[in-house]
Image (cartoon, rainbow, N blue to C red; front, side, top):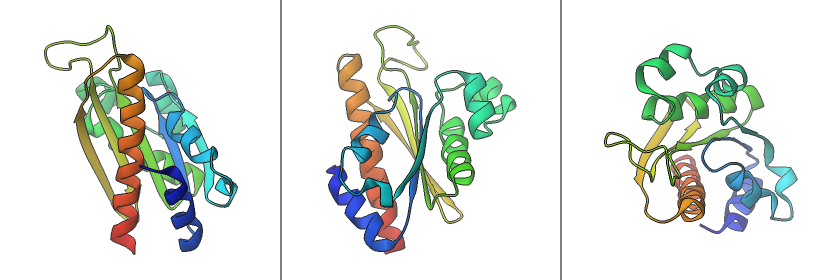
Length: 157
């Protein structure tokens, strides 16, 4: 997904976005701020790699992390909703996953990533099963997150 399209569309809609990233480590935010004019639509971004950071900065519930884990639909949703609220943004985008090469398990293999987009009173979450090395997984996840944001923007108009 071309981030310049996202920035242009957000600006024309007079809307804003904020990011909450774990496995992508700032790649989503970086893609957006690489575009001239991003200051018109990008509020702020958080890299919440630890569970403690997810709870402190994004209001992810400890009970969610304990029950489902950091890499889950539930955590991605709470991250997106939390960053949207904290940043007073129209859209909140989140990513959490296992980029590898270690850290995977049979239940949650390397390449499992959840991305989420919160807007209005909705939150869409997508599960991704990505292949490649650590860098490839992270970049693919960031691209997919921008695509999800674009899809959510389509719903609004």
